Length: 289
Length: 337
Image (cartoon, rainbow over all chains, first blue to last red; front, side, top):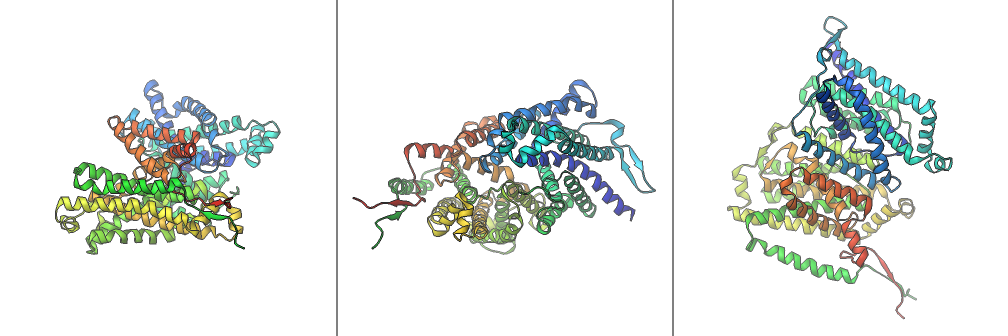
């Protein structure tokens, strides 16, 4: 029994990380209907930036966020303004294929710069410290921190979207870009801000990923698939749904891994396909697409 | 009284294209009688990529089905060939079409799942499915599990007794697949179904109101593309003589490269994959010494083409000189005065 609770608990905490992967993807889809195939590779890029910062300054990975977040924010703004804005309103092919090309470019640039060796960031004793919940049950402080951060980030994004002027402008361009422009909203600037914000969230996810597991230039696509699955399971356009989707995916992987370690990823994908067959619009759908 | 207007699809460039194509084909068929082993292998590789690109272009360029998961069918075709040859005792060359059929059969239930996703989400959904096949086949120990396996020597000899004979057979099969894939797309688009397809692509609502069933039409395209892709996958791994889940279901090899070929050559045109394949292999030869830079340059070229010339390199040439070697458009000709 305890083993079962442990499996579900660890899976749910892992789901926090997947929700962080997914939040950025969900945000940019919600605001500009852009599906960013390079999302996973941008996560890995942020992890390498954190690695460089940690190695250059000797500060801890969590502290490195003070540099990584603004850098990724800037990259997001420039990327959207300089490149991805050109792909919008031109049908489905340009955004899809341009972000796909970008994905391959980022992977190979990282491969050229950092080789295929796998890396990891060290967060010291905190990484392995755990909170004892019972005789055979304990949760790590680090997975707990990831989960709490995921909840906080999603609550923050939700508040930003529904409580602020910027959020209102975001929702306006999402609902009707033409009308929003008519009222003086600068779409290009807003879309760039949205991507910047998404990549700021990506930075947090990236640092957690880099402390939690090994990474190398080729792990991006798998993170994109996890993020995508969390978004679809949760229901398009719903940020809290994304958290639920992440948790379901994490639990499915954790249960699969408990049965046989080789089944971890397979179990997650199968859970996703089952939801797709039974509830094609996800569990908590919001957007219509 | 009959209408003085006639609908026709032939063009002068089309007849020129047929002539050029026939000449190229004759040249290619003579290759085994004078070229070396390495050249033949390279041409087979080009033929496989051209065929894969035709199948991907049929889906993305004509049916609006942009897939990042066609490696699923390359892998299933390859594995089906190995399974049929090693466990079913089927002669490898006979196993080739069977592998395509198996890929098509797998595509039917798959379509019902991935067709629930639209546009870019369909693209990522197909990728998830390919991952599911890769991870599942890694669990099948009878087919080599995660590390894969080689085709036993006895089966290799069953293709043809001598290495030279095998090379020739594989070479002619490769050419046949590339020509077959190109002809299939061309004939399909010239047919009634092709008209439905282009109508759907250009104006889905209008096409549906005229009785085109968009689900069925797309389903057929998806299945036909899986059939072709499965046969090509079988040939690719028949030539490699070794298969593993990572190689068989590689998104980089069988989908990224193919997408770049089609985008650079010209999406939604039959000449596009041909031009793209030539550019792809030229770039590869040119940048062979620069490792990863080759993929970076390829990705950058594809991004620039998509943004600045979405009709592709062939599109630029064709529009400039009004060339159309594979005429699939219907033109209305008025009465001659």
